[in-house]
Image 1 (cartoon, one colour):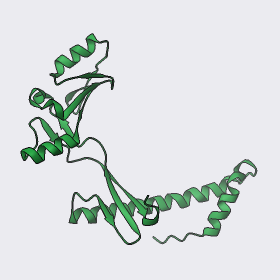
Image 2 (tube, rainbow, N blue to C red):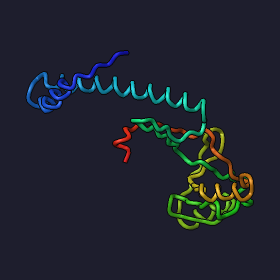
Image 3 (cartoon, one colour):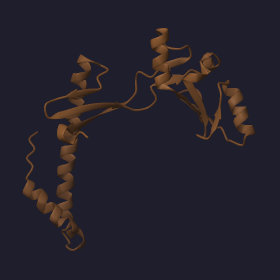
Image 4 (cartoon, one colour):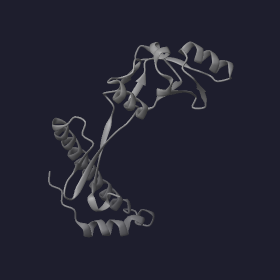
Length: 180
C-alpha cells in the first residue's frame, strides 16, 4: 500500500469543510477527508499490530520502546489481580476492598454474607450467569501495589488471589518532541 498525503489538499479540505452547509456537493470534501483518515487509521493499526508482535517476541512484558524520534507505549486494561470468591475467607483483608454498587463497602466476608448485608442496607445485588458461573454486582478491588509488596516479601502470590494473564492492551505511538 502506498499512501501519499497532499498537504495542500488537506488545507483545501479544511477550508471547504463548512461548505456542507452552503453547497449541494459540499460533503465531498468531508467524504475525501474521512476516506484519507480511514486509510491512515488502518495503517496506524497495522503498524501497532506488527510492533506489538515483534516486541512481544523479545519480551512478552514490554512496557515501551524508545527510538530516536518516537516512543511506543503499551498500556494494559482491566484489573491485574482478582480474588477467588471461594477462598475469600483466607485472603488477607489488606490486599483488597469490597464494593457493592460502588458505594457499599464491607470487610472480607463470604459472598452470601455480603449479599445479605447489602440487601438489608437497601442495595439491590443482582445475580446472573456469565460464562456458566454466577456473577454478582459486587466488585472486589485488589490493591496491585499491596500484591506486589506481598510477592516480594513472601516469594509468591497470596492464597486466593490470581493474576489475569490475558488482559487487553493497546499501543500508543508518540513523537519524542510531543511526549509530554
